Structure formats: structure tokens, C-alpha cells
Image 1: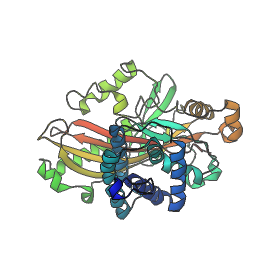
Image 2 (image 1 turned 120 degrees about the vertical axis):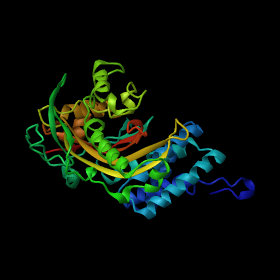
Image 3 (image 1 turned 180 degrees about the horizontal axis):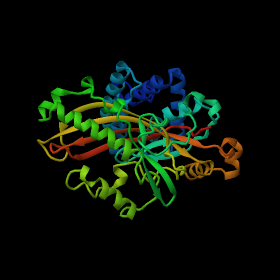
Image 4 (image 1 turned 90 degrees about the vertical axis):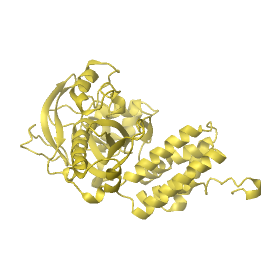
Length: 396
């Protein structure tokens, strides 16, 4: 129950603005009854009641991540988007004035994931760290495709690694053979017929571009460069499934290859904060692409003041993508064991026999990526969220 104003007016868990936002988002994405979602949130709050209260900076970082996700999510209606963003904004003020308990923070961070897990039983829920400049909580489990066939990509066939043969890979096509310590695969590039290459004026905030000195031509160029960079390097780079330390030869090679894309000072930036790396298991190496299917969408193009150079503009292209990464049974089992499953290998396979059926699996990862360009047309900053879905699907 919320406190009376004369006693401070502190909101209860149910009516806190962050709860309202998270429940609305979860309902909009899953259509699970809101009372059921709130019951899950209450259970999570109880589960985390002994956790330390988060620092305000940690709460604000979480709210930043949620705002970024909501702004780019193509499945949300504009009504839901505005409502959720409004409550997230008010949640900042509440957190500063009233603080946040460890249980509430745990509940907010996990209610969507927990709701999806209950929808998709049987499913093993485990933890996985992704990135939103600093961090993101996600999860990975295992599920046979017979439980959710509509989400399972078609099995990958043998396709020559050539742009002359587009293959069944969604918004990307084969580019060139790459051989590394794990074997040979076909790197992909953006399909020139993909909608991510098509300029859509309705997605462009021309008023903000003009305010900061950018033109429509700048927007078109930035869109093309961002879409291509996301396809080739963010989602399918040479260090995608590498387990390499900073300063290693593999990272040095990547930086040398891509350094010209970035403004001065960014050439040596940590690749962990620029592309997806050091998270995935070793992916399939059979001469075909490591992705079964990729979808890339440009969400918006706008301009704003640079966070590092006052008075200077930055042109921002925001994208939303999904990549289905191909992994073997052994890699899937190793990955699950290394990322939160607490039982034995034998117990894991007994619970999910599809992990020992000799068939390939895919791990879908949702990626929200924004690139900021300075007036010289160079990337001067990025922000991103990598959100693995809560299932590993059997891929045939």
C-alpha cells in the first residue's frame, strides 16, 4: 500500500512508476494478463528481498537501457511506447526521492524474462551478460523446435560463399570465405536490396538535422554506412565468437581493418564496447555463414548535441536487428553450463534430449545498435544492447 502524503507518500511496489512501465511493456510484448504479470513481479520481489539496494547510478543505467529498448522496439504501438517512456521518466524522480529496494530492482530487471519463460515451458532459465555500453541482463535456455516451430529458422543448406548466390539468410548475403583458428566460414554482408538500405524520410528528424548542420545527403550516407557496419561487423565480425584478450592479434587485426570508420581517438577503442564479441560460444564452421538468418531494420535518424564536444552536432542512426546464430549440440551444452545452468552435463541433456540429437541449433540474439557520426562523417560514438532470446532452438 502506498504511504499517505503526510507520511512521505512513498509508492508501493505495485504503483511505483518503474513497475507500471515494466508491466505495461511485458503485457504489450506477451499479452499475458497484467494481474498474472504482477504476480510474477511480486514473486521476484520476494526472491530478491535480501539483495542490497542498488545505487542511484545503477538504477539510472537500467532506466537508460529500458528507454533505449522501448524507443527502438518495432512491436510496440505508439500509445504503449509513449506510456512506457512516460513512466520510465517518472521512475527516475521516484528513485532519487524514495530509493529502490534490492527486491524491487531485481523484479523490474527480470519480470519480462520470467513471464516469457512461463509462457514457453519447459525451458531452463539461466543468466547471460550482454552489453548496453556497460551491461545488460539476458537469458538463454534450450527448447526443441516442436514447441515453437514458428520461431525456428529453416535448416541452413549449402550455399556458395559468393554475393552471386544470395542464399536463405534474410537481410544478409554471402560475402567471402574467412578461415580462423576454429575453421572456415562464410562472412556475410548486407543485401543491397534490403530495406535497411532504403532511405525512408518518415524515419528522419530533419528539423534536428538542420539544427546541427546536417543534410539529407548526410542522413542517407550515414544510414548506408551504419546498416553495412551492423551487418558485417556488429553481427558477423571476425571476432564475433572469439575469446580473445584486449590487445590480442585478432583484435588488432579488426581495429586495423575498421579504424578508418572511426573518428580520431576511436581507432584503439575496446572492441567489446563496439561489436558483439566474447559472449557467444564457438559457432558452426562448415564453410557456410555462422548465421541461419538475419533481419536488420533502420529505426530512426536524427541529430543531437555531442556528449563530448559541447556545441558540436552528432548524427545518430538507430537500428534494430535479430541474428540467429548456428551452434552445435556440444557448443550449446557447453554454453548453457558456462552461463548459469547449475546441474551436470548429463542432467542437462536428460532434461533437453534435443541437445544430443546431432542436429544443429540456433541462438537468436536481438540487437539494438546506434551509431553517431560527426560532421566529418566518421563514427564518434555508439550505444547498443545485445539481448539473447530465452531459447536455443533446434535447427532441423
